[in-house]
Every structure is written in C-alpha cells, then in structure tokens.
Image (cartoon, rainbow, N blue to C red; front, side):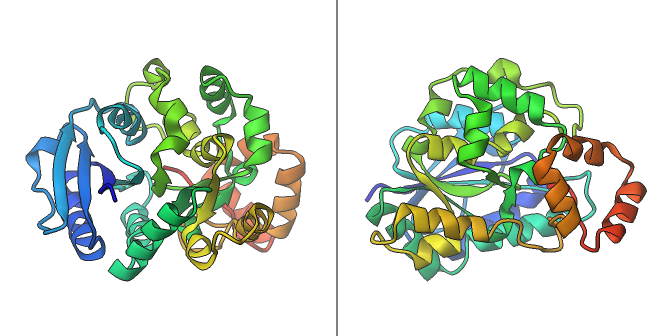
Amino acid sequence: MKPVAVFVHIHYVEAWPALRERIERSIQLPFRIVATGAAAGTVAPPDSPHLCGWQTVETANRGRDVLPFIEALRQAGDFDIGLKLHGKRSVHRLDGEAWAEMLTGELLPSPAEVAALVARFEGDERIGLAGAPTSFCTTAFHIGHNEAAIETVARRLDRDPADLMARTPFFCAGTMFWFRRTAFASLASTDLADLFEPEAGQTDGTAAHALERLFPALCEDAGYLALPIDLALSSDPSTSDSDLARATREQLDTDNAFVRRPGMLAAIVLSRLPHLARVYQALPQPVRRVIRWGTARGGTGSGR
C-alpha cells in the first residue's frame, strides 16, 4: 500500500499544533505530508512513527487553500489516496475555529475508523471522495455570489457548469475531504492559476469559493462517487451506485451550529428560483435573521 498523502495548507501557523496533534493521534498507518503555504517550512512535522515523508511546497497567499492544493497535486509525486486539510479559521466568522475543529474531528476520528476508511477506498474503486457528513450541503441553497465564478472555472476545465450541478447538486462546505488522486486529474492537468484573485479578505465570489462547490462534482464527473464518510464506512462494494447516491442526498444539509439548512419555505423557493439565493446572501445579516425567523428554520451560506 502506498502511504496516504496528507495535503495540509498552513497559513495560520497558530492553527497547526492542534491539527498536527490530531494527525498524530488519528493516522496510525503509513502517511506522508505535503505542506503548502509560505509558513510551511517554519513548522515542525508530526511526531509519528508512521510518517514516511515531509514535503513543503511554498505558495503565495492567493487562492486560500485551494490554489496551493492544486499546485501541490502536481508536485506530490505518486500516491493513490489523499486527505485535504487546512488550518481553517474563517476569520470573517466568530465560530470559524470551532467549525474547523468539528470538520477535522469527522475527517480524522479514531485510528481504527481512519484505517477502515482507507481500506474502503482501496477495496471499492468507485469511491473518489469522502467528506465530513455535516459538511455536505445542497449547492443551490448555498450558491452565494459564486455562480459566475463557478461558470468560469467549469468552462476552463472544459465542463458544462449546469451539467455538473445537475449531476452532483452538493458540495463539502469547508473544503476538506479524503480523495482518490485520479478523481482530480483534470485539476492537476489544467492551468487555473490566473483565475484566482489576489487575496483581499473576500468572503464569497472567488475561484476558491467556486471550487469549494465543484470538488465533488468534478470527482463524480471523473466517474467516481462522492460520499459522506459514515456512508462510505457503512457501505460495501455490493451496494449499488443508485443506493449510495440516494443515501448521500438524504444526508444533505445536516443542521448544525455552523452550517444552517434553509427552512422549508426557503428551501422550496431557493430550489425553484436559485437566483434568489444570491439576493438573500446580499442582504444585511439582521435582515436575513428576520427572514429566517419568519420561515421557522435558519439558513446561512457556508462561507469559507
């Protein structure tokens, strides 16, 4: 078995110790680190007997964790199964660090569960991506100001954005997941760098936000399945593609403290008239709060 390639974007150095500790505790099988970011060369690697390598890829602070990940895919060498992580803080949110802790906890549970997940990837070649169950969101409900950016990125990849969204109408909020290298071959072979805007504290509408919403769609476009981790672990190769797809859709928009699903009325309106999602996201937060109260259940964009 080739070592798992753990891609970690280190921009917030202060977030690295907790992430490093979780990696040390949860990955008890051969792995190597591919660390990106200007600070990647200044931090200590995990102290683990299972660590097989530590590679740093210095990248500019552009494209958040997404453009560095794409660049690292080209430089990472040979691997089959990867894990994409980053020291997420989402500084535009008061709960950004807590959200990151929840996501990494779901992606890196007990060593036995991590080993079982890797075994599932190895034993079922249909699985191309496995994400934190609470991160799976309906794209139309959380499109934000990203429709134009999604179209630009999809067209550069020679893909029809409407077709991608129709086939895979969900994404992993927070942009962290386990994946199969070949599921993202199109990203590694296409130059997207010029699409990524200079960093200016943007909270929506960038190429990074677009790709956050496209990763599962690109995975499934490559012929694989994108699944929540719990579903990947509980299924087996005899489970049909259609059953897995249906079960995944049944888990979308899990209500939690960090990504709120739209209320029933809002969900119906947004699913029928997706452009209203952009109008909703543009409203001041107090106005959105009143709308949420009026529709009984809250709804916010996932935000990076």
